[in-house]
Image (cartoon, rainbow over all chains, first blue to last red; front, side, top):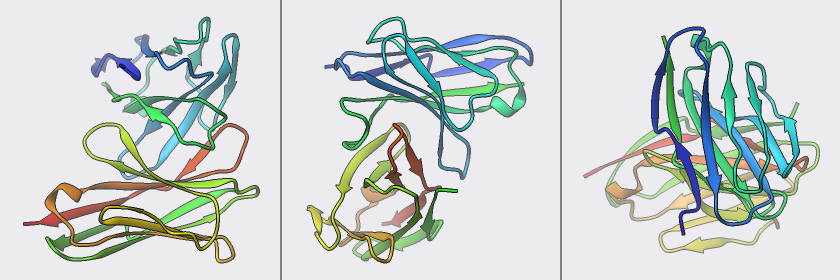
Length: 113
Length: 110
């Protein structure tokens, strides 16, 4: 059982480039989330989805976009990368609305130079 | 504004010591509080607390919630080097999201 799979694990982008962080879960969870974690900071919610075709903004959505065409996949798109987007990104999923905690992916470490 | 505050920010102890990590919160609609352990990668789930005064226990780790005073503590007894990690507290306030604290970085020296 793979759980939540994120790719890539590491990436270096130049300012202004774009990329997509991939996230796939095989637990048939309806709820999926993208968080970023900056050094010494807690996790901040970027976007979340309550099911296929439904997405909504979290606390820090600027500079990002998401889509949820299937239950399994929840990619995060960075357009025009900026140094402020240097962070570790975690994808997570949950069976119910969150009361029972998340299953996290292993993270993507992104550096924008 | 909803917030979760953890203390201390970091802690260095020796193997065998007992540590207490603190998490206080202010949220408009408390539903549950979770503790996670984060080593080099993804956070892993430790405990979920919803009711005051009921201790959750797993081996050398235990946690309790005080909903009147709005805090939780995580205790680790007889610490081992493998306990070295960042411990995250998160409060679920509904609206499909958790509010995370900044974490307590624990280092256990041999």
